[in-house]
Image (cartoon, rainbow, N blue to C red; front, side):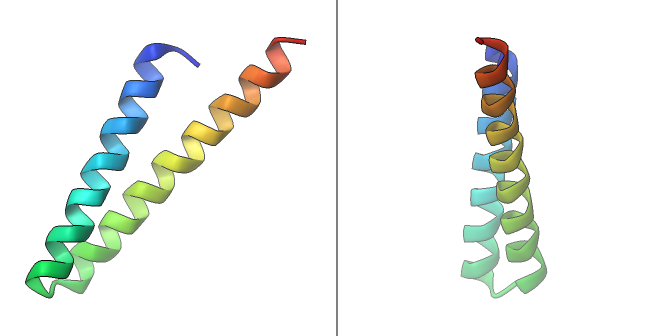
Length: 58
């Protein structure tokens, strides 16, 4: 996984976390759900990249 991908996924995860916390604090369920979705997408992307890297090394 390239460093740019790592950074991009980390930023997406952090922005999702911020949305989730903001949504919870303001009582906006839709924003909280978007935050969970963004965080989950970033986590899956990161796991997929790590899996690809594992197979490339062999």
